[in-house]
Image (cartoon, rainbow, N blue to C red; front, side, top):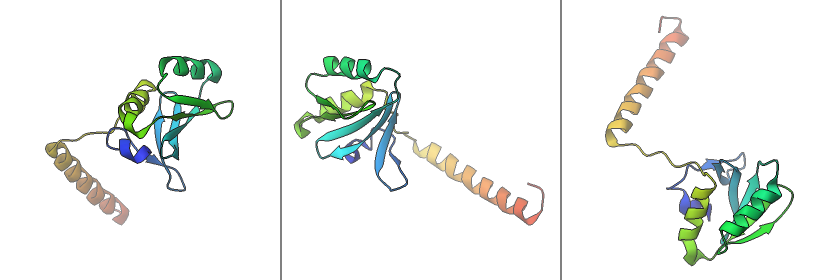
Length: 124
């Protein structure tokens, strides 16, 4: 499920290669085809969970543990999932113009050349 939102939000991968999103309130990970798993970094996770449950009646929120819960919705409600991810502060994907990509590519080449020169013992 996470993969379908990868273009909108910055996708990270854990040491096993599993995708997840970082957000202001914690981490969002793939739980199944129709559910997100959400780990909250909150001092009062139940208050946060209850507030989300009140705000998102279309989603089925279920408590998994003290700081963890699931958010399930029908695949036809993909817009709800997108709005939900935005509401919890999920980090947006970076978008670059062609000029920015070219500038970054040139900068990377200059940096690599400088590092090679420095490794040889010369001045950067």
